[in-house]
Image 1: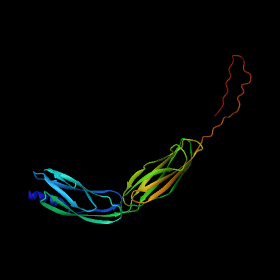
Image 2: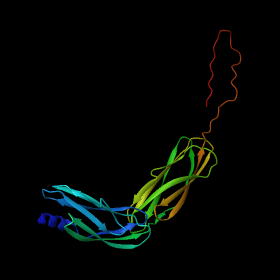
Image 3: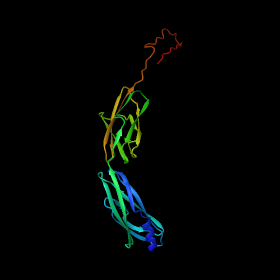
Image 4: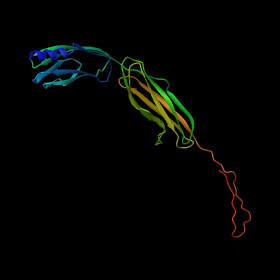
Length: 238
């Protein structure tokens, strides 16, 4: 069995570096124990302070691979280095180094107010909001609405997404559609964009609905004298 123990230990990396990770966001890496022997092998993983292992103990079945997930959810910006001891059948073991650098995410938007102008009833228009990630860590975000209008009112602004994840130094294009339903109505909504573990932004949308203008070409239709049993037709235009 010694050679199989050694094969497993050799397949375990000397170190796992998470590199830059995001504060208050879970980061995961995977480790595999490959048992090529004809016997099942017990394993345990100890220490690795700040990191969790799923599972941290168990059995690697013969001729099978066991995936072990290494997880960390940092609460603040910190450099964290730890050692984890992986033991097989309480006989042989290996020390593996785990490291990470956690940073706070930060997002920006290209504008805080979107004015859709005056739109004819039954029509719609679309504007775009660019969300930028200026940091070296991925940033997850959520968007929620905070209505400034009292009472219930119809939904007129539609967002293409209310949550997402932006890679480092990248941008996310958010499309917002304004749909008109009721004439002579001014609409206004405020939205909060929350970066999970980071900053909070606000932006607003406004627009007005233009009603259709209709009129008749005549206010009165006079058929004058019509013989009994006769028929007369006149046109009125709308």
